Image (cartoon, rainbow over all chains, first blue to last red; front, side, top):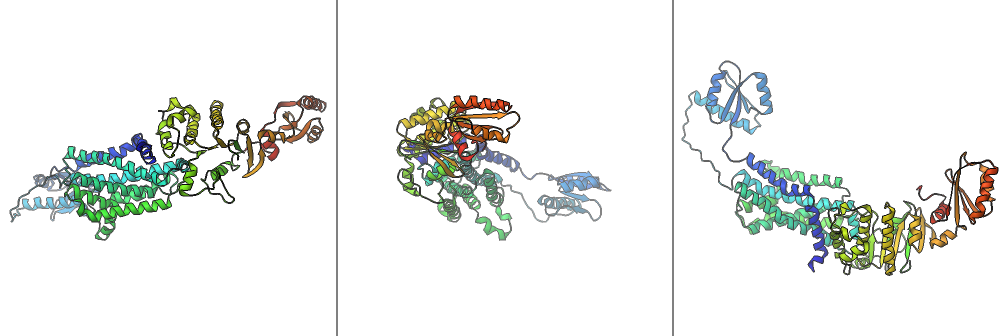
Length: 344
Length: 285
């Protein structure tokens, strides 16, 4: 009977231990939803926001404020020099205009917002002094689903979630079993080692379905994030990702004797990927020299594949390159983990 | 070890009992020598697993998964064996039926220990290894575990157990090996080992003003005294005939004008054997 099979029983025990731990359930299921909700709200497409600019107190300041305020994108305030310095430093104003001849724009050139403010302020000022636009232009805002930040974000969060639950889910329970000598106790039975390791992969598979359902369902209901490709393809990509990260989790946990020890290792593995792998913003922002390295990370490859399916509706056959990277990471980690695993 | 016997490894903490039993269980490789369990040495892989089918093992330090219930834990363990007790059968063996749906975290120390033994018994073992099964338990839980071990033996099972309670060994084991610093220092039935002291009773006493050196010699001269051991403030005499030695002892002390602060007597136990062999108290270590 299947119920009596050790693999089934071990996987069942894994799942029970997981869902009876409310904190773990929150971090795996609740946290990504909270993140998606918060970021979806913060970066919703409501048109460009207004930029705060300061005008240094002095002759002509109020005339300048009136000119700047005439722009729908600027809010100008007169500030004394001490206040202006503080606000500029803390980013509460994007730019400070010092009236006079010439006008002085004081701002931090590395801040995108300040650069925008510089363009906007200069345009309003020049027009007020009589500059004429020579070309006729019209704005056309794009708000269609598929090109918004939330459309970019949901697949990334799905990838990050698969990474986190794979590494935490597998890593912590292996090391806990080792620390509590439960692993040693299992070694004193005829249990097959492969059954033990496979039980993690099996239980990950079950949770994976719930994880995808939660996040994709939430994105669709709350923000109308659609899956352009087939759900089967999305599921297939996610399964490969989950296997790869379960393998990585086993590798991370293969030697560590204490929870503290493995926590450090997990952060070491996950932190770079959270930052580099294009979860919250496109990795194309990194210098060109770094891109090949970034693309070789399993989370980058998985995120690329998930986005291709969800946003571009790509078929499985076209995803060979990123999926090969995901599978390679999983297979290599699993084989090494098996070899160096500390069973006692 | 003979089939059907209960063999005890006795000794203080750090004597090497756990190392010995884990070598026998095939969990720790031996530095030298040969190990044979049920007539076969340990092998990796399928042969080792076949041997494990016939063993039941309880480890000293294992903490079972807190979040699982008693019956879930047993279901996991029984799935590892081709032939095993049902969960109900093994719950009855250790009398944990009413706790079947309780999480492991909520069990008392004695119940946890009975569950650990249940995980060992679930395989219908021929040979049961128990590593300090009653350490840290209250007297009632200890007696419950003794009953479980007795009924396992009554059904024909063989038991190897370690303990640092000499009393437990005397009650349960038909043969014991006393260990100290990794070596067996005595081997035999509890009765034989106690008999090796050459006396049945132990008298322990302490004097208010300490013990003058020459008293020890005088004590050796008393009738029926086979050994005198000065301890930490306490003198211990091994005697054959308590009813003769005790009045003589009191007379001697009165004559020397020495006043007693305490005096106790008991039947000789394995504890006294350990003291006689090592010069140390079991409990001190």
